[in-house]
Image 1 (tube, helix red, strand yellow):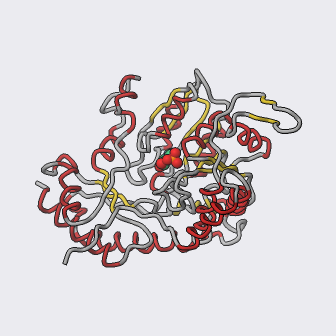
Image 2: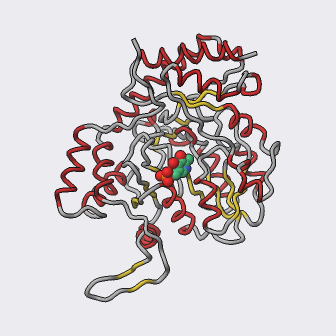
Image 3: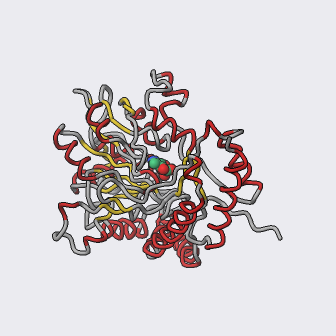
Length: 396
Ligand SMILES: Cc1ncc(COP(=O)(O)O)c(C=O)c1O
């Protein structure tokens, strides 16, 4: 019997999301309107009442965040090479320079000692990524930013419902064992609701602010910079872009938001099964690294991705051979991500292999295994068996 193909991810679209979209389509108002506003209000509650504005995608969200923070030509922004290219590209898009620093081998997030060492008089902001939904050390990050008067633009594209338990918050926050959500703390925090994300609008994003003034400016920047239009005439103070979220997309997001606790819990269940099964398999003795569920102090991952790191150099045919083996067994996998500083464009800016050895090694070996709420225990078992088989076959 041939088993159905198991993709590495699949969005959680249920009948309520389909009905909500149909309602919008029938309503006569399909662009930004009441659903987008309701989505923003619901997200604001999720993030402890902080101001939130939605955008058409997470890349636009990050770019607006940089503009709000006043980042431009001549400025340096410190970020990680282990991310989707969008993180670095938006820094270039506003005319600033991304400064990549290496990552911690266990969390695969920015190495905060390396961050501090890379700060120069031109550094204006830090742009950490909570890779795969595992938070960076939010306390240390905030302390570094304070010490050097830097803005923090968190690329939390993958981190909806991830949490940070600050040791300092014990006794102060209700339900501290669950920590505070990423987005409920921090400076400017950017999320993506692209199709693969734990919570999706098909495409979309949101930005969380400290002040209503910054939120109001972002609202203008997402719609051409218009400050007034209609009977009072048209006025614009600074040119903006076009990155508003439509009600069609917002309706999908709203439907998903209701199910976020269930979505997060299911992911954690499959991740726990993967960890138990792969820990027992002995693959680690062959040099395969498993993801850690723990950030250095108190980060709680949302298990956006479950990634192993393969010893790529010792695999006959490299990582691609493992991916091919899994594909032939009906299992989809992904690569998130090759180190960004080694892509052609960044090499032309002077980045070279060997400069960020940990990120480069992880970038060569990282492999994303299937993880999404609707998969089953048997699916996880099948992936583990096939991964084990492929590694033993191809490792020398
Ligand atoms: C880490 C990271 N940053 C930025 C983005 C950009 O988001 P979007 O695809 O919604 O533009 C993504 C997602 O694709 C991402 O994973």
